[in-house]
Length: 331
Image (cartoon, rainbow, N blue to C red; front, side):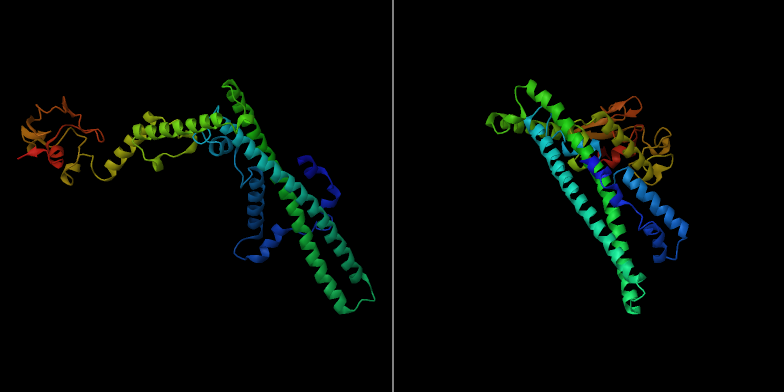
């Protein structure tokens, strides 16, 4: 089908009648704020890049990981095989429709050319009245514009067919790969309507959703905080916690919770220079730990040497103001 779109009727799509019709160049008529060359370069480059990277279409990665995402369509299930077939079949239908539109457009191109020839005969007829010549010139200009518009539509169909074929290949490959796993489990896509096969599919989906929720909880994330579909069941908890620590440290510094002068403005401060100045820190104090009055800092169960192990978000030295900010200090 794609070869049919790219090759057949090349002479019909030829630009003989529109070789001097440059819609990019004519854009300069619409705007005087930019140089003609700048407009032409911008539009041409974006148009060319847009076709090369298939703007408006999904990537192969998105087809495999978003459309056939692992939560809704677990690997090794008939449900995933069936969905891959469905996605591919839908695009096959779209490709067929594109072929029909392609041939219709070729027919319309021929009609535009015939109209131009008709109007040219009137313009070249010395017996034509002035108003007939003027009317023919207008009709010829309209036909030429419609011809170029349809030529561009054919170009768009060619690029669209390329994208559809790639997507069809993506889903067909995903189907073959998954069906191989499914068959090892004793099922095929042709068993799609058997109750026990569908029960297996929905059980797998439920398990994936449970795993997803547990992983979010382990990573201390809400769904909205880490719902990138390709990784929703493969969350790297260690990586997420590392990111969280970096964010917290950055925010602490931005809000003035760290630094040598931080304690002067905020009681939650954790100075980087080793703690609160000695003149502001009592030699010892009492804190309330789960209802028990404990002598601090030496008797504090959260103290490890000079470091407070209770403060997991912001690292720092053991100090009086931190416990005071938590309301643990007993005056």
